[in-house]
Image (cartoon, rainbow, N blue to C red; front, side):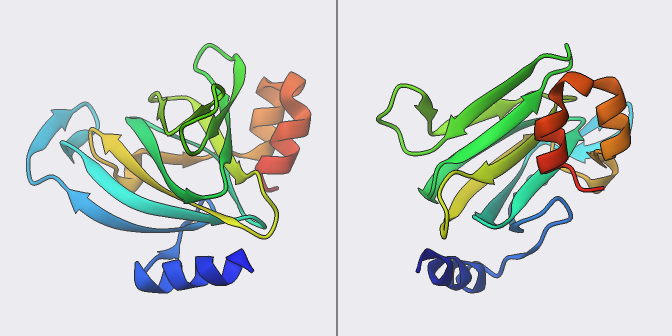
Length: 163
């Protein structure tokens, strides 16, 4: 079963539970800082991030751009509500199929969520944030507020945004 593979990866990479769902560990934080309106931030940060198929990364947003890079396991479906209010889905996975990309940019300010596309599996990715990640710049979506603002996306919000 692939989830035993996921548990081995979680242990070998010393991953911890992430507030949005899934597992992570920071692997890099630049010692170079930049000054932003919200204060000083590292120039860049990088994490490993793993989702098991029964988990999902709940809708959230950052004040910085975030790149996701696929490593192994199941492709991920990433749902995005852009700053323009338009909804898109992307498949992050191994290169080879036209609609599947091995890396994806999630622009600052967009709402996004992710889930594995295969049952009894996992997805291992890296995420790099520019300027670097700080939990002060991380916002979990509130289901009621997202539904009020984007009622046309009710079905995906109800699946990927806990109450």
